[in-house]
Image 1 (tube, protein in one colour):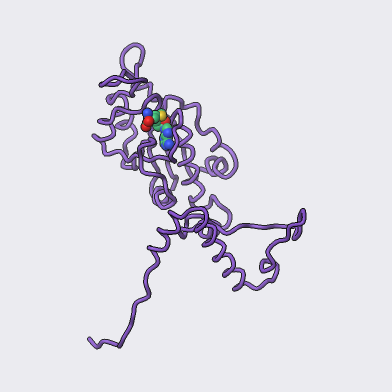
Image 2 (cartoon, helix red, strand yellow):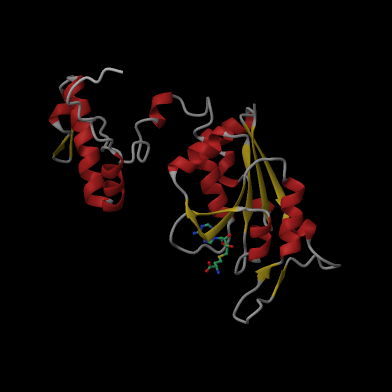
Length: 241
Ligand code: SAH
């Protein structure tokens, strides 16, 4: 079944953009996923198809009007989750990406200017997602990021199934470092254990490296990882029913 992406945007020509290349591009050609980029301006108001207005309460910039956003969401609504890309949203995680990829697809709403009138999002219970703590000029690059992350998880898109299982974030840890030939380069040798052919030792080394790099670089992930480890049940004696 085709995973369906609808993007509501003032700049539909930005799509599929980079997603027409490589893994995502091939999958798009093969019909693993489909893309429908809809121009928000089609729902604009009046002769000039206005989509925005000045903010109540004053301040710089323009706000996207609720009727315009609502009409676009209504036209796309078929039970797929709707997501607005906003810096105020919940940070995007691999867990959310996995859930979205496992569903029928997604409707993505891209903002411009100062963003959306909040009522349009609240009225339809639209989920708000941010791709990080920085501000883009529009939601389109954020939508491309979210789509890329989902598409690579769709069945048949990545070569080896296990390449998604061991990578960063899947176990709440960053990934261990990779090395390839030559075994020595510019005076730097590949860690000895990787050349040993000893699979159990390699697995243990990779695990230790993943833990070390997570502890050093991402104390936040490390803390979450540690509190998620289930405690081994303490069995004192067998209990008869
Ligand atoms: N005034 C807003 C920023 C608007 S940026 C604020 O301070 O919160 C314009 C649009 O870019 C937003 O409506 C949103 O769709 C998109 N955008 C900007 N940064 C983003 C981020 N980190 N994640 C997702 N979307 C973002």
